[in-house]
Image (cartoon, rainbow, N blue to C red; front, side, top):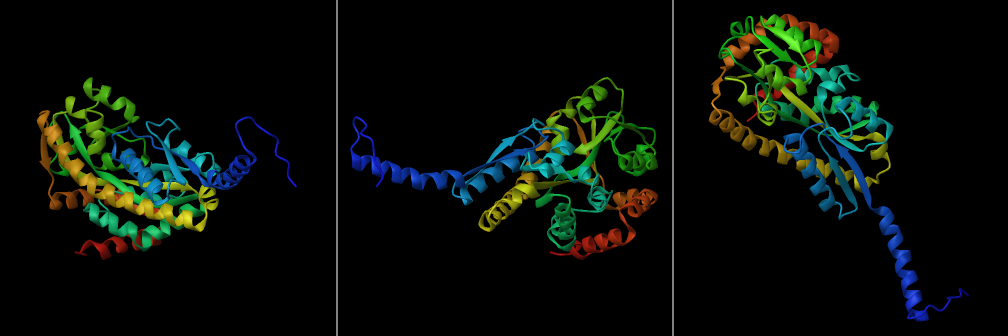
Length: 341
């Protein structure tokens, strides 16, 4: 029989009750998990806001057993570094631009090809369908679980010299582009002088006129305050700023089936929330840049199709890199959802 030593102020019955409570509480405490999540974006960026929403929904749906510690501003590293940490199991969750995932999954690059999507809804439907599942399977093989595909809006063009109303207006513009060979190739084909540089250097380059302009989605344009140093915003919509919400496969595999289902349900809710919220945010951002004095012009679908035709040699080269068969199937998938009402 177990012997209980007398402790002042506690009866034997109280000791037995306390021991029973601890025995029950221990498994519950062990069942609680705090996952580490990161994004390279600022706290007010849509990517970070979605991650926060995912955290809230996950904790609610999981009854507090699954919690997410969200770290922003690249505290855990740049996208490529965090992707590796997910694969190693030292980080659990992240948001990432899919363009950097293409370093390990060549087919993922197609999401950022120019003029693949005409609307945000096309992107959503296509990535919720068979082609999204195919890309997710490739990611799973690399040690990532795609919880959701989202985006941060279409990429547009700002500059200090003139509005862009047709592709010929790019001629001679010194344009900052992301450090990506395809983007350099794209803007050369449009007649610009592309200048790759990190996003951290863009504001100063625009302010000092080292470059005439740049291209980015509205969230980056506004959060980096480019409206202070640029006169024209042209809604060229030349590509979509695609993003994935990822969990490391090592983290995923240690979750129970019920926990995995909870994670996916929370991701679906956060994805739907972001899709709706981004529309409102973009309208507010357009109002912000106009109030700051930027001249904003839309670019018609016909002119965007002219730009796409001018970029055909670039697109053909990129199709070859991701695989002609995959590219054709992907475009067919987008066509299938294009006219869905």
